[in-house]
Length: 144
Image 1 (cartoon, one colour):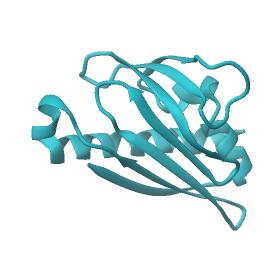
Image 2 (cartoon, helix red, strand yellow; image 1 turned 135 degrees about the vertical axis):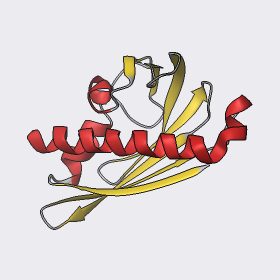
Image 3 (cartoon, rainbow, N blue to C red; image 1 turned 45 degrees about the vertical axis):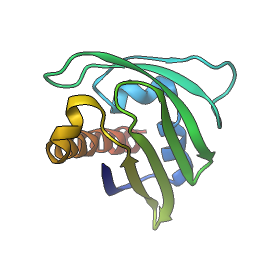
Image 4 (cartoon, one colour; image 1 turned 180 degrees about the horizontal axis):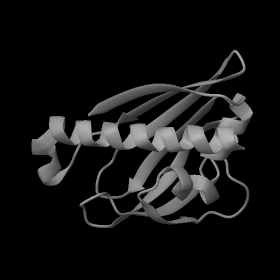
């Protein structure tokens, strides 16, 4: 499964990158998160791990362990699911765009279990969910 999305944020790449990579902000823009905890000590960077609990709409709450697999401020950020029900990894790139930032997002991975039989439907649901997350992200970052 692969999802690609592009959107614009009216703030510089540094501001967008810093917001996206701060675990304290994750539940503010990925609104299905019910708990987010950084489990590695120190400042965030390559290799940082975060434990997340997610309650998708109409679904059962699940937990996953996520690792920051790419961390190049302010241009690139990637996440890898180390442990969780669906190994869908994400990558965001941040490019200056006039007075703001063009954000490109890619989610990719193989669905597991019964979800693999519903691939196209699940892909559309996840794409809609991330479009909503990215709208929250844009509004929150632009609000400062």
